[in-house]
Image 1 (spheres, rainbow, N blue to C red):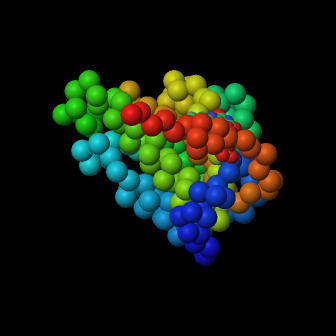
Image 2: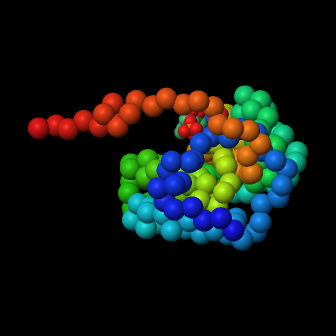
Image 3: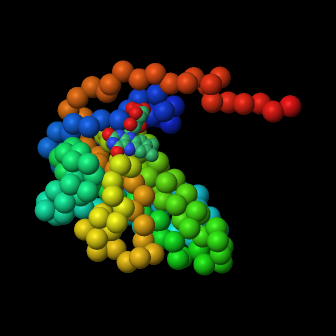
Length: 173
Ligand SMILES: Cc1cc2nc3c(=O)[nH]c(=O)nc-3n(C[C@H](O)[C@H](O)[C@H](O)COP(=O)(O)O)c2cc1C
């Protein structure tokens, strides 16, 4: 099994939207979920949930709830990261925001770990929250935050430009 270094991962991770049908080894899935379990979280409460969608019809419904982004259903591993907005009850008004941050961090860890293992993925945020909740049968307190289709890449990433470190970093004297 490939294991890239952290800085290799930062350099090589790119969004991929075409996947081979090759199945993902269970040990890789365990590593990805293990990474999520190691994330920092508000108060250590881990107020997020990760769902793996295996059901083909459910995947197709998710595609329809996600502006017909077909690659979502074509990936051999589809994870849905959700905020659990009730678990950090002690945080009052901040609870919802913290749970969203927890879920976002977990999805980031999953994406980076997938890359470290030689897999590719794309973060999908363009979906209808309510429809995805209904498809998954989620209770009201569980809010879908990000979809992460993962697999072996079947395309090269698109050319990308960034703002560069000087564009995003601001030093206030
Ligand atoms: C919050 C968020 C939402 C995104 N939603 C989508 C999406 O719905 N569909 C998609 O194809 N890519 C989506 N992306 C992926 C971005 O398009 C991609 O990360 C960006 O173009 C930079 O390219 P890179 O990931 O290859 O570095 C999303 C990324 C983020 C962080």
